[in-house]
Image (tube, rainbow, N blue to C red):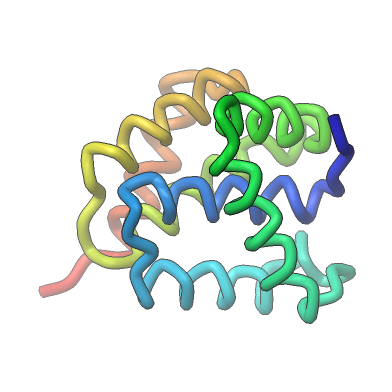
Length: 136
């Protein structure tokens, strides 16, 4: 199994959520791009590689056991202190288009499990994402 950087692991997490319902919306893609462009965790990431990293993730997810492979790569690449960050980014993508599908919610549950995010922390992260994407 290949190795990925912590940047790629964070991007894989976001792409997985966006692709989970087989409908990567413009709002979700814009959210991913904005986060990669503006968040401090990505300040040393070559943003020109975003499209390639996203495509690598999409290719991996097409394989028979692609989801499990992706989770293994992500977990291996992320230091513990970035696991909550990965979950927060995933929640932002799920909330970006104003609605979280059942597929996205199920994937968020899998991310929580694979990255060992406790329920209280997950609930706080989810509530924050919902609040940031609320409309009148």
